[in-house]
Each structure stands twice: as C-alpha cells, then as structure tokens.
Amino acid sequence: MKASAFAYARATSVSNALELLATHGDRAKVLSGGQSLMPAMNLRLISPELLVDIGELTELRGIAVTGDVLRIGALTRHAELARSPDIAAHAPLLTEAIAHVAHPAIRNRGTLGGSLAHADPASELPACMVALNAVIIVRGQAGERRIGAEDFFTGIYETALSAEELLVAVELPVARKNSAYFFHEFARRQGDYAIVGLAAQAIVEGGIFADLRLALFAVGDRPVLAKAAKKLVGAAVTPVMLSGASAVLGEELDPHDDQQASAAMRRHLAKVLLARCVSALLGRPDLNAGGSA
Amino acid sequence: MTAHVTISLDVNGERVDAQVLPRLNLADFLREHLQLTGTHVGCEHGVCGACTVRVNGDIVRSCLMLAVQAQNASVVTIEGLSDSGEIADLQAAFRDRNALQCGFCTPGMLMAAQDLLRLEAEPDREQIREHLSGNYCRCTGYQAIIDAVETTARTRMGRTL
Image (cartoon, rainbow over all chains, first blue to last red; front, side, top):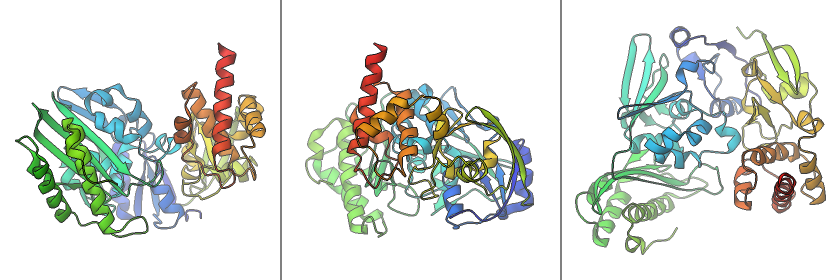
C-alpha cells in the first residue's frame, strides 16, 4: 500500500527540528533513514500528520573517540558503522551485530538513532546498546537528557524518548583490556528479524568472568539484560554453575508465542545461546556439550 | 500543509525538476512521473527488493525512500545501468544461465548483484547469497542467479588480470 497523506518539513538544524516537534508533538514523526518508519506508514500502521526529515543534519552524523568514550551520532548509517575502523576497534560487538541487520540496501539507509528510537524488541541494535552499557543522549528544547540503555527501552516500540525530543547520539565505553564479545541470533533467513538473539559483552581475566552482560532480544517486550549472568561471574565456570544460570535464565524470561516460534522454543533457544556464548567467551568447548538448536 | 514540494535531482545523468507530494515514494516517482518502469514495485514495505535503485552510489529500496528525500541526489535506475553498458556482461550471464523466468525481480537482482561486484571483485557463493538475501525471486530457486553472478565475477577477474 501507499502511505496516507502527510505534510513534510526538512529540518535545517537540530533546534529547528526541536521547534517543529514542540509545535506538533505526537502528531509528528521524525524521519531519519526511514527503514522502519516508511514500512509502517506504507502499511498504514501509523499515519503521522507531519514528517520532520532530519536527514540533512550532518551535525548528527559521525563516529568519534574521546578518551574512554566512543560517541556515535544518531544519523550514522548501519553501513557506516559496519565499515568504521573505530567501531571495529572499540565496539567490535556492533561490527558483528550490524551484519545481521536486514540487507545491504536497508543498511545503506537505516540509522542507529532510527533503530533505537523505533525500539523493535526483535532488533539487534537496542540489545547491543544494553550489552555495551550505552548512554542514549536525547535533546529537547529544555536541554539534554542522558539515559542509560536499560532505562531507555520501555516496551514494544516504546522508549523514554518524548514526542518533543530528538535522539542525537549514543555514548559507549570503549572496549577495555581483556574484554570479549559474543553475538548470535537464530533467524529463518539471513536478514530476517531474530527468533531469539543474544548480544554479550564481557571482561575475562584468567579464564574467569570479571564482568558479563548478556542482552537477549526477541524474547520480551524490550531487550532483556539477563540476571542469570551474575551466576557466572567471579569464579571458574563449571557445568553445574552453567546449568544453574540456564535455569535462572529460563525463569526470568517471559517470551511470547507467534507464528515463528512458541514461548517454549524461544526459552530453549535462549538457553542454547547462553551455553554457546559462555563456551565461546571462555574458550571452553566443554561447556557447550549439551543442547542443540 | 500537504502541499507539493519542489525537488531537483539527477536521474541516470539527466537533471530532473519536479513538483511532488510528500507521500510519493521514489519508486512511484520514477515509474509514474518519469516513466522509468524498470524499477518494479512489489511489496512496498522493503522486503522483496524489486524496487532496488542506486542513490548517490549506494543501493537502496526506492519504496522506503520518499521522492522529497532524493532532493539533490544522484539516482541510477536499471535503465541507466543497462544503457551505460556497465552490466552488459551480467545481463548476458543472467540470460545464459536462465537466471530469470518471469523477470519481475530481475532489475532489483541486477542492481544488488552489481553492487556486490563493485564492493567485492571475487565473492564466493555464500557472499553472493548474503548480498542478494534481500531480493526475492519466486521463479528460479536462486541457484541460477548465484551461478550468473559467480560467472560474471570470474569473467571480470580474468579480463582485468
């Protein structure tokens, strides 16, 4: 189908965009890469009265490393993330995850900020932000707010962003010494939304997790930072510890049923991912003995 | 507020000025305003890949881009790619390998395949599959398409050696 009629404003600056959003509130939608917004509009799932196109705000584009902080502008496209040496060096989890986001033609248009503001619970980048402990920076006419990724995602397509605010950037801590990452998702076909996925960031010292952040996606209404990870930190992981963590993970997840998979299947696949992840991060094939997908 | 917007852009090397409604997507603009009907419209929500065109050198879904977003852009459609001779060998390989039947997906397939061959001179079959994963074909079962792209890559490598 075609999108229903709407008015269009090409923002000339961030403050111009914020003025438009302040005036029109939730009757307006921000157009960034449009790779989630346009399908929703073409399917008439949403019909905003006004699109505020921020595509020309080059001040929102780019990747910069300052000290221990990696800052990525909201308008940075997926394809730019994928080929950025700064991302590969300081947040390699993102480089790996981006290859699973849709298809080349979509990655050429889609933006990081757009993906995060859209907040599809099955999409990769929100989970990566949670795993990487990112800070999401949003700006309104009253000023900037810095929101931790865990607090930013509040439900299906819902975030802490108000209708009058613009997501302008994210900040990530640069990968520390001894950091390791894992990314995997189960999907029917390359580029499809995940049935279940896991983005993980860890610090491994002497074969022991000093820190472990497991962000699962497509298993709830938002990315889930698994509490089960706590069971695996601070001591050499044994098969018994791993099965304990797996049981905790099964209990804390509340996945949904849909045409792609039942809740039970999603829970099972999440546990399979947990075992693969822990085994891969620690270089311990013995921990991935059971459970197949 | 839903007034026409003036746009100017470059399409297949020619400057185009037009008045369009904001809701008009780039695919419909190309097809209905410029009669460039080689760009096909399938699913209209970014899944099938039939509407793939090149904008500022990168392939995009023209059903997920508004015509007004193409302001000052350089757009190349399958007509431009074909007329320039850039993909004559790829087109010949598609014919030779029976990599099309009904032909509906073919313009988008050629766009995506040529994009891959520009980025990666000698892709393996897995890379070809991955790059074409956003383009649906309901006739061929894909094998013949992968064959045609692989053959073209090899021939081009041989020519440049």
